[in-house]
Length: 508
Image (cartoon, rainbow, N blue to C red; front, side):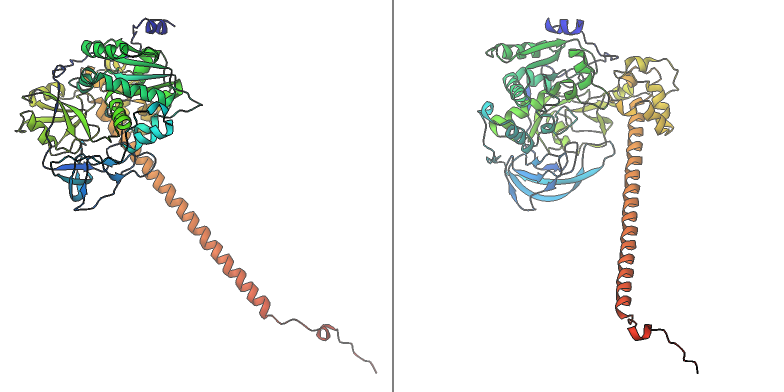
């Protein structure tokens, strides 16, 4: 009740458990969004979302237009991929993607022609209020929109009007609590009307009655810009801006919902089960462009920062652009002794080299000198059981015990301690005085559990195939035996009536 009362006053109690206050280093918060030039080559991976990999629709030598669908979605948990510019497909082969392992994925290589001609097959929907919500949802799917906050979950799946779980409130997540990252911040400052327009489209699609734009109080210019946009509305949309105390990981979906509404999303459930839908700033603007302009997702705003970057900033980058090319636009050309991170320093991924394409999950490209990187990743020491990790955990787990079980591959015990409830925010690792990379152990254990489950599924599938084969062989044997019995029955002579008469002897 107290939280709800404070929310009505526009004051957030920030009531989620745990959390930390890292050095934010928002060095690019006042850097306007610049446009990155087109590179000489674009490499577009066939999977830039959580779910199934896409299948190419184009061939080598084919000319494509910007926004043209070049790979189709396979399965429900998938969205298509589009050409970032006009040009020619020169090859389709495996290429490295943003992943710590350096793994590759089938990708389409496009050589831009410099014309940047756009495909116009998707008509704009300026009258979206009159459109069927199913058509709007299909538009979001066809435009390849996935969560641009880093999770890349196909957005159309969340935009469902479910009568069993009606959405009462749409929360626009303007928290951006990861250190260094400022791309959402700049979108709210420079494109506030488009962001708000996208939010109204989302509220219309899910039939929500209330909208909240949540922004941490370390972004006063973003708060002012979004408030100005809300004030310009006619007052019938029931949308308000809510300033939140700065605290990491408040941008995590479940923590933000708890901080604003006081509702806790149960383990294994979704925000829709408590009547809430959360959406990222960049994703919301992409929805605006998809619906009102008919533009598929072909670019995103990326923060380029770190102490090794001479000219830090925020750039609008075409998907498929080499990270090396992006860094070069910011003055970084020598990568010797530099540590590269994809995303933020808390939840991002280390990159082995810069020759990797920008994808939908590329919120930030960080380049850190060895000294700063070692400061953040010192040598691991034994756990002293201080309990700081448990106090910082926003999920209220016991990270030290969970790490022990994960390190020793005691996977069942790790799952008993709610391994998969961990959101990998890194708060526990940040506060650990022994510098234990706790999240690394959790990711390792999750990967091991996933591998065991895949092996079990494969074994079960093999067992089922074997059982079906044995049943088929038994059935075929029975059918053959039945045929033999039928043939024998036809070939066996039938005894005559005379033969059946018993013989009697005549006595003299």
